[in-house]
Image (tube, rainbow, N blue to C red; front, top):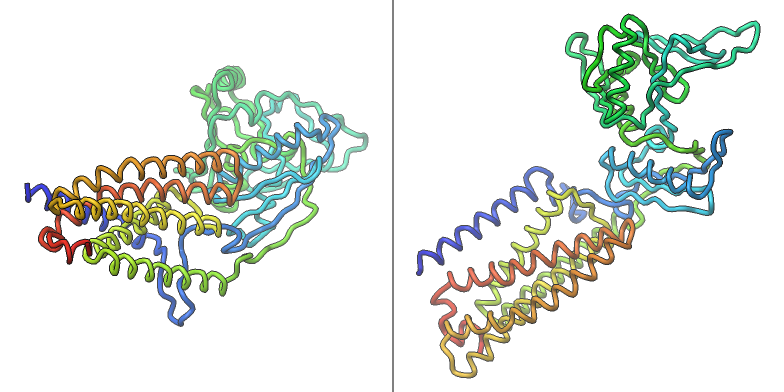
Length: 443
């Protein structure tokens, strides 16, 4: 029996060490600055904690399509897809009026780069060059050189046969060509697009296939053979791998249904501020110390063990946020603090039930078992109702509200584990330290 208790304790300790490794070693969530300015949080932070870029986009009419509310909604979805491909966290997208879209991007201090990544129409076309005629001003890019078509004596009517578009792509990834070492973009068509690509390349061996992005020719490879599997490659004209990656992001995100024009751009600083964040962290540290002291004074040795379980809870929560790539925002900090309160509340419920059993004359072992069993239903009910609220906030909320919901929900789940499992393991392992009613629970 005792060996199983020690085995459980060993598992809990190993879990805590793993959480510390995940939370602190790779990303340094918290580190001490050389000069005293508090703590420098290295976890992903939202716009309110680290600043970023603020853009206002306005949808434009085209001869082919008007900037209707449906078109603007579709443009928002495309922009959101592009941001997701960039790995940006906690972006905020919202409509303003009938045509405008407000985009807030945490961590991007260069609005120009943000515009390049999310503001392009990114209409990709694969064109049969046997029937294409480029108009004056069109740019032909091949072998790393850009040539502008000369002015014609008479206007040229653009005639092009579009074989496939970016809508037919299943994936696009940037890499290096194994032969030349130059950046390239490998793409793959899906479904019928792959079959169309195979049929076209098989029927046009030795001819050119022109790849056009937003009316700019970016590549014109010679078809060497029938290409099966719907796979192809865009090469030439990329200055570095980052440029190829940006194109791959645009292709994966899809083309905007209507062009957008940037009417406002600026970099924004953190709304909370460095000093305010430092004060918030100091206040949180003071509050945590008071909670720890309260538990020790009220419940003595079990209170100290509950404090250890609470510290493990905080580390597990930080590790979970790192693994999930979550973003820390001011509402997220509020969710973290709220979940800490609920975690210690579960221990208080358990300990109070144990004290009731001890006052009824039960032994410490029986009181601990009965107290945990009696408190479990109340803990489960309160946490399930909180989780329901968190799921609703996540489903219906946006931006920081979702961050609050994620932090709160993950915290509630981990708090149930630490209160029910970890604290119990600590108390069972303490053995004689909690056998005495007076030393153990202060009854």
